[in-house]
Length: 247
Ligand SMILES: [Zn+2]
Image (cartoon, rainbow, N blue to C red; front, side):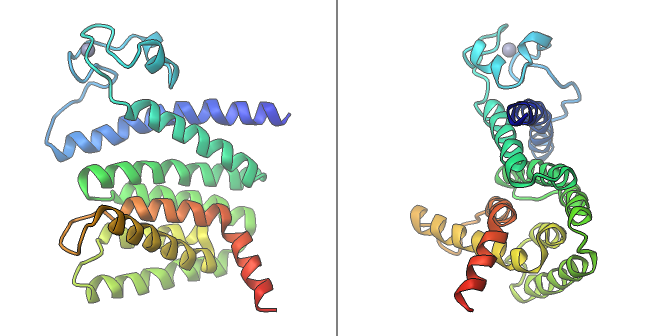
């Protein structure tokens, strides 16, 4: 039974990841003003990708990372996103046993993967993505039944983040504000604070390692995406642990 659940989540995650690739590359094309209405075409030679060359994760390795027609390298990001999404879905299966919470966490996980890569590519977070994070949050709160608490959390975070947005003279992006506010519905009060803490910590570690200063434009979205997801997974344990410390 567990094996079946893991298998289903992995396959469904890989297929979802394949779809996420389309979305991620579409944002990239838009930011470069490339009009590319045809999908499932080789980005180098434009030939249609055959259905059997379009199998998530597997095709990349069968084709040894090259297009069957022109031999041009296929971006490693394709299998990476597919594997990542598959793993996120499997982890969610173990962490969120209940079906509504599982659906919600998978919607959020998938949206955060898109946020991670599009913010990296284009330095913007689409509000559509944040809306999907909110949508996933509805499922998670539905499963928990903590509507009042979590709606208030989302509104408070929206207020505080908006204030920070103006005080920091737009040092944080409006996309970050909207993402953090919509994610706060799923996160609840403790995890909302915890995820901002994690994202800032990751950002600081990254800045130290790469030696970037305040002038370097580093997207905050990837750190937020990781912070939100980690808080979603571990927040309950962390808050219980902290609670015990103060007893
Ligand atoms: Zn090609």
